[in-house]
Image 1 (cartoon, rainbow, N blue to C red):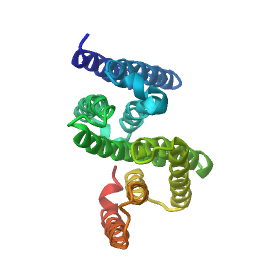
Image 2: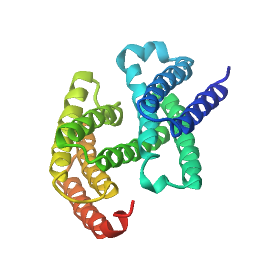
Image 3: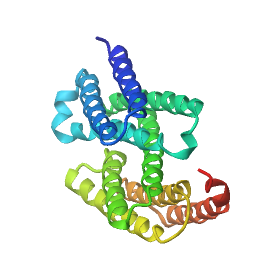
Image 4: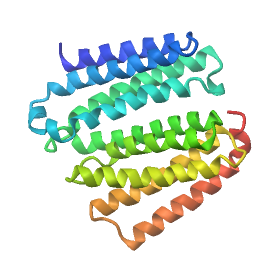
Length: 258
């Protein structure tokens, strides 16, 4: 089966499964989500396995290629349960958007396996955008639960580690150091989530603030690992953080309804 057909099959199964999960009650909905996570890992791996260089690079980071497809599924599973998706039209749009994102992830990751692939830079850019979007979905969904900090901050820590591994893939040859930097970023993110739990804001506002911090932290680490970090770049990141925080807080009343 060609790559396109395999990708379409995997995406179709996931979208139908997510739609079905919205009709189920816990714990059956979570059981279906776990099954979909396994299916998307296996399906995506089958697509990557067809790449002519996969065996040369498989031992180094192939398992990290499963992270983003799985998080796309879990992010959609949780995000589609927010109040903003209370109407049937919104749910359909959300499901179609999830399918498009998942297809883009699988296709883009395929083109990042070979560093000499002419589409590699563009594919990496698309993956970074999707990684941050998925991070926002998960941060917002977790923060919206209003669980105690021990639960929510721990969940955000785990998600931060996993997405950071994908974002930092290719910037550091030593996988141990990649894990270290991912852990540091995620720990700082979890501490921020812990602090935000004492602030009465909506899930979307909390998710945006966490995303903003996460974007700045991963951007600084990426630049450092690539040897591009300068004082000017640090000032730019600080400016983005300040302006972004002001904009998110200014939009707080509107975001309160979602």
